Image 1 (cartoon, one colour):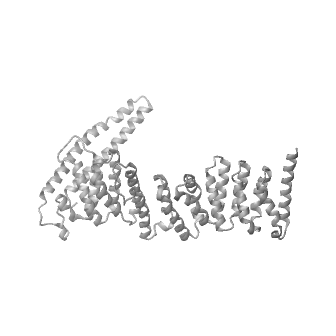
Image 2 (cartoon, one colour):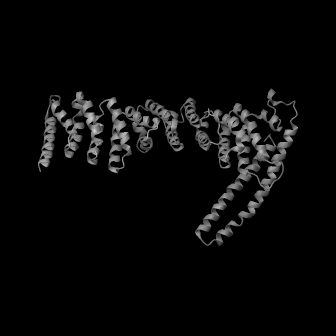
Length: 453
């Protein structure tokens, strides 16, 4: 009974201190009252602590000399076991953001609280952080990105918060636009040193949405994006054919770079890396990874400059000879051949005088590199035989596939379950894609037979 009375008296005393501060015209004359409110945090009275969590932020700005003392008390409150106290303190934090030092500390603490398993507490943290960010974007975001950069244990929670809460309202937060977009770009560049593939894509998609990397941005801006992607792809490292993560990272990075290549950024480093590091060990790459590599290189080939095309073309011809037999066979890897012929076509168009020494195509450009005085007829004969053998193989396979596709409608009609129909439709779709690949190969092989086309 005595304890209950003492607790009630303590709560009543805090209300009186709060009322006195509220009614005071010159609150600075009541520093002792504010100190008494702060000191109550050290007690055992739960209700008093909850009330202190309301009063400390409310009068915080009136007592700058007690700022550090008050801040430490609030930090103690968010570590309490009682959920109600923690939530009250979290809600009060934005009122404490009076200068850059305090805002950074508060943002750091709130960032750590994103790990809370209580929905109501996590929601309070989200709202408090957003309120703080709206007050001071730079000093609020900097400590959050620091957790991502350092790889701390809360980095995933921070990234989810940025994705769900901050990035969608960038137009509201990033003002003045150019300055703040540059600021957050620099934060992201420091933070993507050690992130997962999905996290990297999230950050790159966000950067590409900024106006400084928009359609009217200078070419240098797009090159900056490419350099970020190149660093993630680790193009300065020796290619390790046994490192599946490196293979997947290289493939996903060049795929991510494709839209930026279309805007004038250079694909040189990626293509040269493919020619010098990947092609020599292509046979050793796991089969399930080869097609993705070839697809991304093919998709990049239209944007290769002449110099890069000249360096890459011999590697492409080398792979073509491997996958295009010199005579008709039962089957070929049509996906590989389709990618390689597509790449060959675009690279050869950029540097036509290279084709003479590689496959005997004599295209006169007037340059010494045409090498018109040399005899490459054997190269030409070999390449034409491979193209012819590929065409014959593909036509035969296409004929068999066409006959098989005619049976799909009958199979669907006779299917007894939805599961059977679904499987048949999937097989039909796969066959349609294969037929499309065959047609592409035939079109490209015929064009390569006549280099003037």
